Length: 191
Image 1: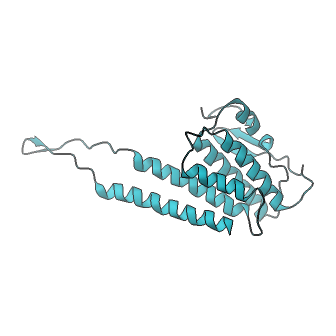
Image 2: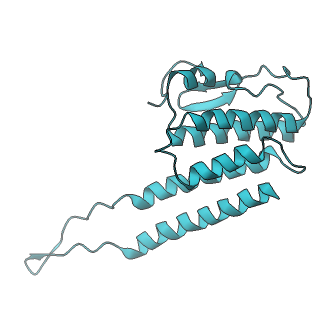
Image 3: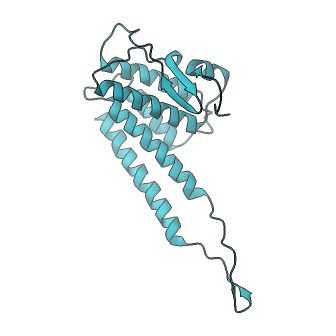
């Protein structure tokens, strides 16, 4: 059950108390990665990225301001710590829920950044996770069946319902384009 209108809790407390949904994993991890990316762009290092330093409230996640607990003042240390938190979150998503390409992509991001290569950045990680989040949302929209419009009488007979194929093609085309861009972005993280 999502954390809407709940008091602030640490991610560690949430992980101990229940499983996560795939949407929570994607939303929270992309929020944390975006926040870390902003810190790094300003030349700051958090230094204490742990599930205990992530606050979860009102359906969102943010880093606590208790930075500097690490002896390493390097951005790659934040990236390693984030990868560990991402792995903890991924382990709390039921396998049957996340046994798809999204889980594979998130596992790849966590594994690749557990020992960041030169050039790894939170900006790339945040972009990858945000792209995965949007890709999943578009897929969900594409799989929803549109409700049929009210039939219009033509010559005393109701008009047959014909789904607009152009809309279905647009949804699937957009989902495929985002999935392709996500794959390209993930591959760029590796190299």
